[in-house]
Length: 143
Image (tube, rainbow, N blue to C red; front, side, top):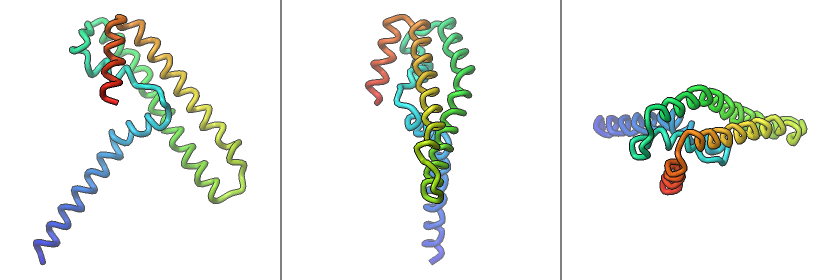
């Protein structure tokens, strides 16, 4: 009986740690994909710098953009997720106009898409055409 309890405890602990991990990095990835349909090419470029032949100046420019804009993007994604949660809750508990309430969430999504488009345009100015095409190919192969 003790062995069964120990085994069950270990299984439950492993599931809870897996869940906690998903709420961390994995959930952020899911949230970002959910909040906007545009690809995250900057991350691919940075993670594959050696394969792409990215030089130090290019890497500095990539990291500068990322360091400046990633916190803003994360904040907007969290805002979309919060606004969606509130929209759902209000739709179930109030008679408020859901369409009108959704406008704020949609505006935030639009801002995310604009920022992602600007990010990809900036990426094109930092990388060579060949490097950028390789980034797109890597994105397509892992997606």
